[in-house]
Image (cartoon, rainbow, N blue to C red):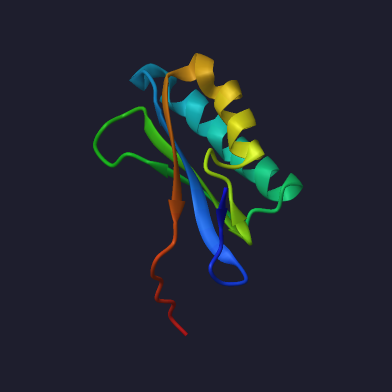
Amino acid sequence: MIRALIEDMRWADEIRVRTQPQREQEVMEILLETAALASKNEQPQSSLVYSHCSAPGGFSLILVWDTAVVPILGSDTAMLILDGLKPLGLLDHTVMIERWRKERI
């Protein structure tokens, strides 16, 4: 675990999924439902689902957290999601720490 240098630290679990193009709609629906459930139950700051702009079947599910500790392997929620997505295609998981942000007022 990484201890935050400030009281709270924003970080994200990014789960990338690569599936067969013919399963794209099915996988997108599963990811959207998963993001909604994760936000409801575990309270990440935000849950985002992106699809690849030019490669059918490519997705990212991003869970953004604001906690005092960043788990090296990611959140328990991400680990459960990864287990559930295994049958759908190739998976990659990365934990990213926010370094800069500009928000519009």
